[in-house]
Image 1 (tube, one colour):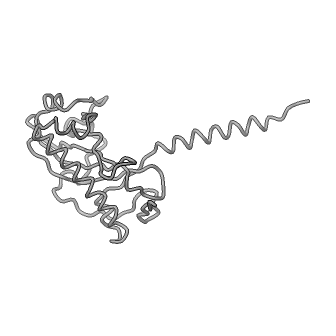
Image 2 (cartoon, helix red, strand yellow):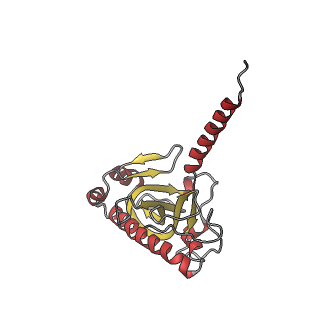
Image 3 (tube, helix red, strand yellow):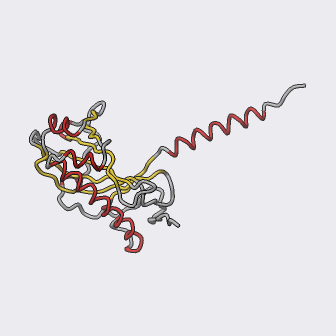
Length: 207
């Protein structure tokens, strides 16, 4: 008796779908603060509050880094590293970063981006990337950015900094270009929509 191939086909289909679903879970999208600020007050207020809390943590990190207070940074997160843009990126501890890239002499806040996995609700524990324009003792010219990522762990009430990314745009390939707001002390509000939000800011309600 010849067996039907249907069970095998169904199994393969389910397997492919599971792989696709797992891949989709690793896809992140993001939205800039300058865009979020264009939304109605009631929608943007909780998101901006979360961004403000995240920025305080990022500001503290950059200040301590500029002051060379590495021990204080490691007391907050002993695993923190700085990734210097390259091909591939170069991972450095704080002392090595200062030795190779120079001490930060000036930094200015530029913008923030909140990133989330493909979803229709925004969880206010997601990763926030706070962007700074910086200068160091070894900066030659052009734009140099420092991006500090923070998030809230499941059992934490305060955001914690995680990864830091440093990029000298004058030494980077022409594409992608630096964000237009990176060179502006006060970036303008950008009207638009955030990915997967269907035109609104749908914040996940925690019970």
